Image (cartoon, rainbow, N blue to C red):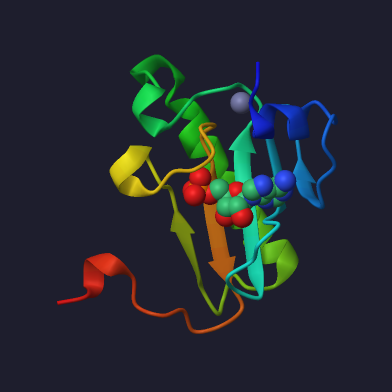
Length: 116
Ligand code: AMP
Ligand code: ZN
């Protein structure tokens, strides 16, 4: 499949790996917008969160559990962090493989939903 993150998971395209287990891979975003900008992706291809059925939704709990581990290992758990999932055109999703952005390491600016 012609999917950038599947190619990273398969090792065809290199990444700066942060964490890996049998179900997920986490790596540094190539264009970081914060001191820590990590992408957490399931190894199984889902085009977006909208494509994940109830049956497969356990992967989302696993991803959150992995994010907690990464936050502790990288040392930003106490200071805090932000998890972002962009879905579809209006959500600004560019790579059509489910992924969670984890931003940390500075006081993050307000995001769209908080703007009046
Ligand atoms: P999104 O807009 O939510 O689909 O985010 C896609 C993210 O993937 C962006 O933050 C990009 O900087 C990041 N990205 C694109 N190509 C790569 C790559 N080869 N390695 C790591 N991150 C990438
Ligand atoms: Zn994929």
